[in-house]
Length: 458
Ligand code: PLI
View 1 (cartoon, rainbow, N blue to C red):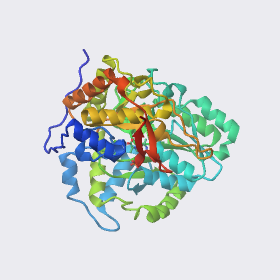
View 2 (view 1 turned 135 degrees about the vertical axis):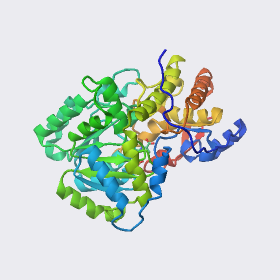
View 3 (view 1 turned 45 degrees about the vertical axis):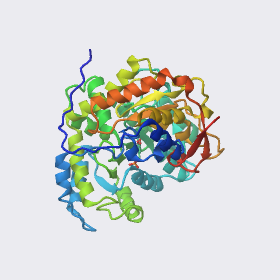
């Protein structure tokens, strides 16, 4: 039997959530319009909504927070964070932002002209929003296999070079402000990109004079997969792998709230001095001074320490293997999930889970609501609701992947929590016929999944 690594930490502070009974949970989700985003945190026994900003920080990070220099300008914590980012990622210039989407906003505003195309290895909600809000069309250039939950490949987040070449042929390189390469690919299931693919994308982009910006949000998890799966990397440290990954990029946006092991923070890093100057000018409009960008001094200190901790092998091994533990349990019970299990979450395949519901009945949204009702485990829809509407035609995007994401916060839960979550899903799977479809009663125009409300069909 596979051995899963024990927690490489001791628990020093605990938080006690409410444990609502079934009736109370039914009332809570009804009041939330059957949208798990609108539940109260206190009402969720095991909160697997997201791994974003939900990390438990270490004693060293908390100690670092006490050294927060909250000056309006020139905070020493920024100097620390900037130095760490340059050292670990290898970029020459860094602009801090309050979180990932702050960096996406600045990058998109600076580089995108209306009528252009931004190719990427699958969309992410906020990333695509900023690209499209600035007049670009997003083009999905991830390998086809990423859209198939059944196909089990080690690097399902790879870019399909032929798709990228086709876009260059069709639109022209001058209509592509940059290629967006995400490590890992969140909505494909947390799937990694191989180093060989990054190298090949770089070579193709060099041929056409294209820039590449990484979405570095879960890059440490990606590096761990490279170490474990890609030939030639077993003896390299996670830190060395991270450094090589980013050597193929012109810059990166990062949400520190995931692999940065903090609750808030982000950055935009670039190598082009002119672009950096323009980003510094823009950050003061949207985020704050270039020495804090929306973060407090203490946040920046915790972020600097978090980046270092995230590259420790014992930490990242446990993090990824704990996610695999939950996924392996579900697979063993025959529950349909996206394969292979990715770095940050287990994605239930709602199409197969609820074959009696067509996609317009919002099966993943309904499954997430039911999982909460039955168990107090909060998850998130990642299907048609999250995908939103086409910005030109207004029609729903209909992603092939209709999923519910069980996202594991870092250093927060134990294997026993994973057991409870797995048992709840398995029980639901045994009673799946009783799950009905949902419809919108309130649909916000942008990023609708956050605030939408639903009701059940009779
Ligand atoms: O939530 P932000 O603004 O710090 O980061 C935005 C963001 C960018 N890229 C990727 C791949 C993400 O996953 C991401 C945020 N993800 C969230 C909130 C999530 O729940 O997955």
